[in-house]
Image 1: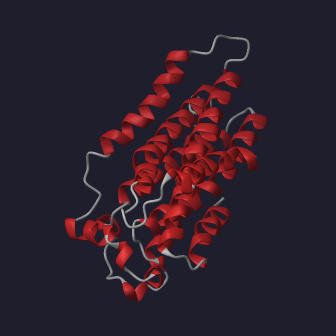
Image 2: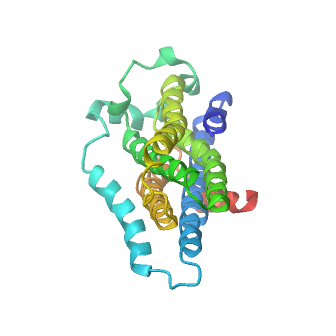
Length: 268
């Protein structure tokens, strides 16, 4: 999981792209993130609920509460100002006047802490999603239902790749240099496996935690956090391109976003 996530997160850094190409790739990555949330992560939770209540009525209230709780948790955390100072935001919003090489050469940007950069709140949201994924992965590993646990783990590993790519594209579009994007991608890649190992070690002794219902609830909480980060931060940021690079829908902006949203389903 770590190697796959980090590898896909590094892919956008090996390409030399212009600002206009970066905008298009950012829109594609945003569509990819939203598509992953709606067509992979949330259906994973729904499937887990159905497996947990075989032959019984699925508790719709718990289903909706879990998904909404994950979304609202990120809304509350978003009240904390992670977007940095006005000067940092201004630097990020004037990217059209910068050389594309500045994305790839760390010396071209001052060493600003990550939490002062535009886009850090989106990274925090994705990291909370990764923590929830790690809990699910750790709990599923100690679940007595081995087949279900394996399928859940496989699904989590698969959706990490497009999420890592989309996150890196978003951070690049926010003006992060390659070292900062690499740090963000490293945090994204290591968080879920680390929490999974801790969860496997600690939660194994708690039988109620490893129940199918608990796994399904954690999956939907994870889906809610990911949906918030994708829809409230990454997608709006990608669609708010600077006027200098704004593309009319007829030139492919909407098509690129839709293509990103459907790529996940096409691959799987």
